[in-house]
Image (cartoon, rainbow, N blue to C red; front, side):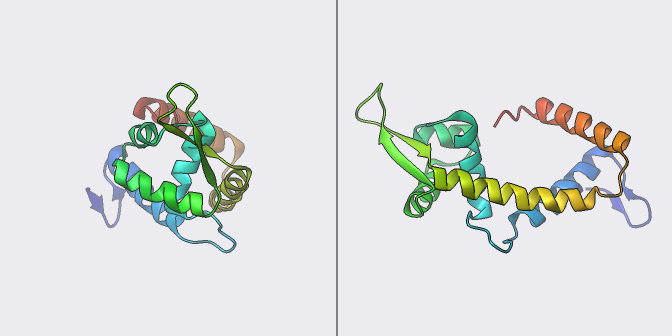
Length: 147
Protein backbone atom coordinates (compact mmCIF):
# COMPACT_ATOMS: atom_id res chain seq x y z
CA UNK A 1 0.00 0.00 0.00
CA UNK A 2 1.31 3.42 -0.91
CA UNK A 3 0.69 5.82 1.94
CA UNK A 4 2.56 9.08 2.20
CA UNK A 5 2.67 10.60 5.66
CA UNK A 6 1.60 14.04 4.51
CA UNK A 7 -0.89 13.26 1.75
CA UNK A 8 -2.46 10.01 2.91
CA UNK A 9 -3.16 7.13 0.51
CA UNK A 10 -2.15 7.76 -3.09
CA UNK A 11 -4.98 5.83 -4.75
CA UNK A 12 -8.60 4.96 -4.13
CA UNK A 13 -7.55 1.33 -3.74
CA UNK A 14 -5.00 2.29 -1.05
CA UNK A 15 -7.55 4.45 0.77
CA UNK A 16 -10.09 1.64 0.68
CA UNK A 17 -7.60 -0.95 1.94
CA UNK A 18 -6.65 1.39 4.78
CA UNK A 19 -10.32 1.98 5.62
CA UNK A 20 -11.09 -1.75 5.58
CA UNK A 21 -8.24 -2.47 7.99
CA UNK A 22 -9.35 0.32 10.33
CA UNK A 23 -13.02 -0.68 10.27
CA UNK A 24 -12.10 -4.35 10.55
CA UNK A 25 -10.13 -3.70 13.74
CA UNK A 26 -12.97 -1.66 15.24
CA UNK A 27 -15.63 -4.22 14.28
CA UNK A 28 -13.64 -7.23 15.51
CA UNK A 29 -13.07 -5.63 18.91
CA UNK A 30 -15.20 -6.93 21.77
CA UNK A 31 -17.71 -4.31 22.92
CA UNK A 32 -19.58 -4.08 26.22
CA UNK A 33 -22.57 -6.38 26.22
CA UNK A 34 -21.49 -8.37 23.15
CA UNK A 35 -23.12 -11.78 23.14
CA UNK A 36 -22.01 -12.65 19.62
CA UNK A 37 -18.31 -13.14 19.02
CA UNK A 38 -17.40 -10.65 16.27
CA UNK A 39 -15.64 -13.40 14.31
CA UNK A 40 -18.91 -15.37 14.19
CA UNK A 41 -21.27 -12.52 13.34
CA UNK A 42 -20.75 -13.03 9.60
CA UNK A 43 -21.98 -16.62 9.85
CA UNK A 44 -25.13 -15.52 11.69
CA UNK A 45 -25.64 -12.74 9.15
CA UNK A 46 -25.34 -15.22 6.29
CA UNK A 47 -28.05 -17.39 7.86
CA UNK A 48 -30.23 -14.33 8.52
CA UNK A 49 -30.01 -13.29 4.87
CA UNK A 50 -30.16 -16.70 3.19
CA UNK A 51 -32.16 -18.81 5.61
CA UNK A 52 -31.34 -22.37 6.68
CA UNK A 53 -28.33 -23.87 4.93
CA UNK A 54 -26.11 -26.93 4.93
CA UNK A 55 -22.68 -26.45 6.52
CA UNK A 56 -20.95 -26.89 3.16
CA UNK A 57 -23.17 -24.21 1.61
CA UNK A 58 -22.35 -21.81 4.45
CA UNK A 59 -18.64 -22.43 3.92
CA UNK A 60 -19.05 -21.83 0.18
CA UNK A 61 -21.09 -18.66 0.69
CA UNK A 62 -18.57 -17.27 3.17
CA UNK A 63 -15.53 -18.41 1.15
CA UNK A 64 -14.18 -20.24 4.23
CA UNK A 65 -12.83 -23.70 4.89
CA UNK A 66 -15.52 -26.15 6.06
CA UNK A 67 -13.49 -26.95 9.19
CA UNK A 68 -13.52 -23.27 10.22
CA UNK A 69 -17.27 -23.04 9.66
CA UNK A 70 -17.81 -26.32 11.50
CA UNK A 71 -15.97 -24.95 14.55
CA UNK A 72 -18.07 -21.76 14.51
CA UNK A 73 -21.27 -23.78 14.04
CA UNK A 74 -20.39 -25.93 17.06
CA UNK A 75 -19.69 -22.88 19.23
CA UNK A 76 -22.81 -21.02 18.08
CA UNK A 77 -24.89 -24.16 18.61
CA UNK A 78 -23.53 -24.50 22.15
CA UNK A 79 -24.72 -20.94 22.79
CA UNK A 80 -28.10 -21.72 21.16
CA UNK A 81 -27.66 -19.03 18.50
CA UNK A 82 -28.19 -21.64 15.79
CA UNK A 83 -29.82 -25.06 15.59
CA UNK A 84 -29.59 -28.04 13.32
CA UNK A 85 -32.61 -29.61 11.74
CA UNK A 86 -33.24 -32.25 9.09
CA UNK A 87 -32.89 -31.34 5.44
CA UNK A 88 -36.32 -32.06 3.90
CA UNK A 89 -34.67 -32.83 0.55
CA UNK A 90 -31.98 -35.18 1.87
CA UNK A 91 -32.68 -36.85 5.20
CA UNK A 92 -28.99 -37.71 5.64
CA UNK A 93 -28.06 -34.03 5.73
CA UNK A 94 -28.92 -31.31 8.20
CA UNK A 95 -29.74 -27.66 7.80
CA UNK A 96 -28.41 -25.00 10.13
CA UNK A 97 -30.88 -22.31 11.16
CA UNK A 98 -30.61 -19.04 13.04
CA UNK A 99 -32.52 -19.14 16.34
CA UNK A 100 -34.35 -16.24 17.94
CA UNK A 101 -31.45 -15.89 20.42
CA UNK A 102 -29.05 -15.70 17.47
CA UNK A 103 -31.24 -13.11 15.75
CA UNK A 104 -31.35 -10.97 18.91
CA UNK A 105 -27.60 -11.28 19.52
CA UNK A 106 -26.80 -10.40 15.92
CA UNK A 107 -29.13 -7.40 16.01
CA UNK A 108 -27.50 -6.09 19.18
CA UNK A 109 -24.01 -6.60 17.73
CA UNK A 110 -24.97 -4.73 14.55
CA UNK A 111 -26.56 -1.90 16.54
CA UNK A 112 -23.36 -1.46 18.57
CA UNK A 113 -21.20 -1.34 15.47
CA UNK A 114 -23.65 0.90 13.65
CA UNK A 115 -23.32 3.35 16.56
CA UNK A 116 -19.54 3.46 15.97
CA UNK A 117 -20.18 4.42 12.35
CA UNK A 118 -22.90 6.93 13.28
CA UNK A 119 -20.48 8.65 15.62
CA UNK A 120 -17.79 8.79 12.93
CA UNK A 121 -20.28 10.29 10.44
CA UNK A 122 -21.97 12.64 12.92
CA UNK A 123 -20.50 15.80 11.42
CA UNK A 124 -21.04 14.79 7.79
CA UNK A 125 -23.83 16.65 5.98
CA UNK A 126 -26.75 14.81 4.39
CA UNK A 127 -25.40 15.16 0.85
CA UNK A 128 -22.01 13.66 1.78
CA UNK A 129 -23.69 10.81 3.66
CA UNK A 130 -25.93 10.05 0.68
CA UNK A 131 -22.96 10.06 -1.71
CA UNK A 132 -21.11 7.70 0.61
CA UNK A 133 -24.14 5.38 0.70
CA UNK A 134 -24.41 5.36 -3.09
CA UNK A 135 -20.71 4.72 -3.68
CA UNK A 136 -20.41 2.03 -1.02
CA UNK A 137 -23.47 0.24 -2.43
CA UNK A 138 -21.90 0.44 -5.86
CA UNK A 139 -18.65 -1.01 -4.53
CA UNK A 140 -20.44 -3.83 -2.68
CA UNK A 141 -22.23 -4.74 -5.92
CA UNK A 142 -18.96 -4.68 -7.87
CA UNK A 143 -17.36 -6.95 -5.25
CA UNK A 144 -20.31 -9.34 -5.51
CA UNK A 145 -21.41 -9.10 -1.87
CA UNK A 146 -24.94 -10.38 -1.66
CA UNK A 147 -24.68 -11.80 1.91
